[in-house]
Length: 307
Picture: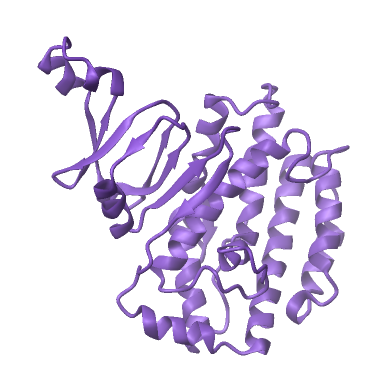
């Protein structure tokens, strides 16, 4: 089943009742003059088990601890946003798999040669997906990207990821510089990547893996290094969506409600994985499950989507 993404951008009271997420407008809930019939009609409920990501984007949102417990128990990622509406926090369950301790040990015992090989596979697929997006969107020459993808060594010791990125961004958005604080469409990319990161981190926990322990990223201040690793081949899908938004001619300087709605569709984007079409969130689950099997010795390759 495809899990849903819920976005809250206005003041709202979120609670739990009979295993359902209950959404209430504070002004209605607190007003004694409002008829009970209207109060009941103003309540909206959502089954907890249907939710994969919940985005909280208003400082006046109230959420009960009972609801938080239920969301986490159902492996729902809860994302909080800052005053600029950019995702800034991510909450995940501490336990997401029945054999978690055993899976942690496989991950912790992974050898350096294995993690380098997994990173090689990851970057190879990322560059191949970048080539596909660049060809499709901008009609640019991608022969060099194809060559670099084929030449990625164990651990990407030659940093072909960086070389490919420079060529990719230069041709996808001419005159554009990719950076977290740069001009638009960096704001769209940052938002989209944050949603993607939440989806990947959620799936890693569901697969019984530690999202903190990366195969390449090792920033001591980053709690989601593995998520940042595994999301790399999925980034081009976000890039393609952002390209379509920019080319539509809309003003992208400000992250409007409509722009956020477009970007919140990322978990349901169509991807091809294992020769079959699948929603991105489902495909990420296949990727993280295969990663665990690589750690346990059951597989030698991570299953990634092909653009």
